[in-house]
Image (cartoon, rainbow, N blue to C red):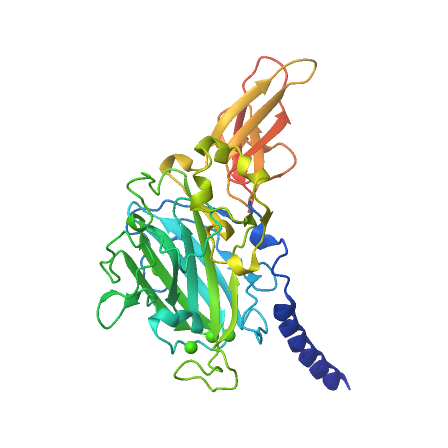
Amino acid sequence: MASAFIALGCAHSLVAQDDFVRNFDTTAEGPWSDVEGTTLSVPLVPDGAVAVDGTPTESEYGGFEGVEVVPNINGWIQNFPGDRTWNDAADSSFTFWLAHDSTYLYVGVDVKDDVPNSDNTNLEFWKDDALEFVVDALNNRYDNNTDNSNEAYGGHCYVNLEGRFSEWDDTGGFIARNRWSSFVNWTYGMTGEIFAQGRTVVGGWQVEVRFAKTLFEDPVAGNRLENGYVMGFNIGMDDDDQRGSEGATGSGERQRDLEVQYWWANRSRLIGWNEGSAQNYTAEQIANGETEDDFPRRIDPAGRLAHGGTGEIVLAGPENGFEITEILLTEGGPERTVTLTWNSLPDMTYLIEAADVLDQGAFEFTGVPVASQGLETTTTISAPVGDRNQFYRIVEAD
Ligand SMILES: [Ca+2]
Ligand SMILES: [Ca+2]
Ligand SMILES: [Ca+2]
Ligand SMILES: [Ca+2]
């Protein structure tokens, strides 16, 4: 009786997961639309520290804490194809790491996937096991479609599980279509502006991608990917489990090769906000959020490829390291307080420690742990009264 009951339970949960990806509310807010949760600080690492060899290690990526994306936990699920299907994290989920050096932006990805497969051509890598990227290089957050906006810098592209690039003609060695960083005369390869290396591993596959910063730097705008520059960035996943009819090796039991497509970020965006409407506003008006009154803001299920749906990455500079940036002593009444501000990482918890003398062994925890408030965190604690020194240090708790 016990084993029959367990078998029934398993069958039921498989059906439930398929229902979940088909009934997923593509307009709902969630971790994918949380602004703080979809803002990541990208560590600056020494030139050449990342080996693009298909094996991402945490140390290569400057201690960046890998971001895991799972469809039913925090990934936004595309409402296509109609018979989309997903079982569990072992069927498809991924963890990604980001880092940059003086020349390149790096993305390392570890993918859980039960059936690694790529049997379509570069232009159709979305029908294979592939990563998708959307880059909003100037972070204008337009409500556009990067499949037809032919971005001058950035845009939409795919990298398959072998590390091959959607916009490149592997045979001819030239750009296959001009919709990705179309103002840049880029090449793909070990010495090119784009290079990636992938390999299958037990339970899935791993890829590392290297993008030259020049792909995203507009000489007219003068943006440089350094020292805290903020850029729109999104990463998505396509799963082909060799059961479709579109590639060379599928079994044909499904019509589509694509079983599920999901994204790390899909933020709400100003519907209709585009290059044309931006000309009616000054940079100051945009910065002050005056556009919020003139355009409705929501998540657009059909707009997953828009700039406005992307998350944001902050290209940390050497001065964006972990340090206390401000100390403020407030006196008055019987109480004295000190307000500390420091550069923080999202999702981190911090401990404030204090000492009477500047001696590493003298520091003691002052009280309650402080949850990160994003890329900058501030907290106020009581300070000792009287004419004496007090030293503070901030410690990462996890
Ligand atoms: Ca590596
Ligand atoms: Ca799979
Ligand atoms: Ca395929
Ligand atoms: Ca697969």
